[in-house]
Image (cartoon, rainbow, N blue to C red; front, side, top):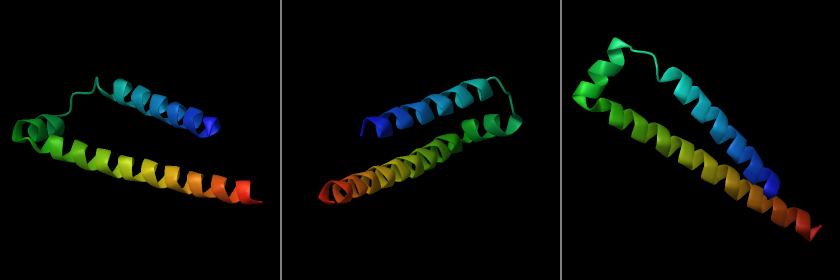
Amino acid sequence: MTKFISRLLLVVAALLVTVVSQAQDNNGSTDVMRSNGKIYVVVAVCLTILLGLFLYVFSIDRKISKLEKEK
């Protein structure tokens, strides 16, 4: 379980570094999306997908750990 948490933290840190490094770009498309309010929809969809993936991986990890303990 601690390996899972450490790997998860490593992935989150890598994602944060990527986001911070890309935050300095000034694209016209992001300005248009931000002015229309659509950027928040995109962020919400991305967060929902990531949360679903993390929950799926966590549930699979629990099932595998349970099976390993039985053997």
